[in-house]
Length: 293
Image (tube, rainbow, N blue to C red; front, side, top):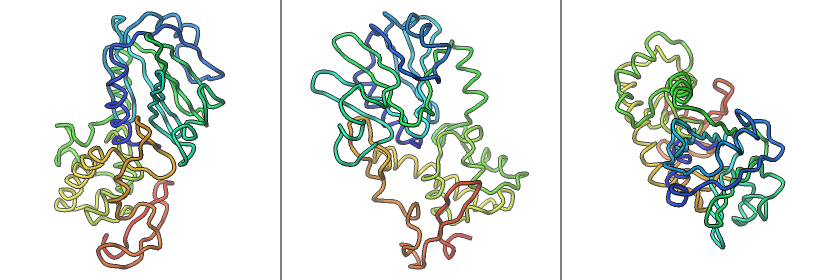
């Protein structure tokens, strides 16, 4: 699943082409995760202009010229947003192939993975592709958006609200593993499996440690490592294995800086001992038993 740096990269790239575009027609194809419904959505969006493209955690937020309305996209595990105009194609999200951009989006558009087609003015098109149909599209008003953000998303790592004090208060009375806690989107928005593993390694903390067992010095190191790694990953345009391309169809290069994620049974870059892989909160987790305590 794309995490905060990947979704932010998609947002920045697509903003250059989508802001100012106007919806001409909308077609939903065999896709149930649309609210308040395909017919309503098509009627409501027709003729409306895209004012801004925002993001919260892994949620993309399209602000519209229609008063008090916002179009939400969540890519979930396998979603893609693909912009097409003449010979230009920009694809962001889950990739189906490493071979080419065309293969990465499943072939010529629309294709069997296409769940929604947004025809824009000036012969522009936006496709929502989703292999497993876990992603969603929602049209909400400002109050509904505020409730969604309040109830589902904590502060992001680079927000002013994400302080050492905030992290300490989260951990003080919680016995859940620290990895499970910082993966919780309601507590900290945008972190996923990759960046939690990397942040915990940088802070030298075992991912299965009870959150309340962490000392102030460890929490300070963890806070700083989360912020630093997210900043670096955004700058590097995210991390790529086989399942993510950014909105230019390029691969993020933070993979070159990974210390533990998906490096099980390989030597640690710090101590040369073997990286381990375990399950924490149902998630595959990579760490160094020697460096992380």
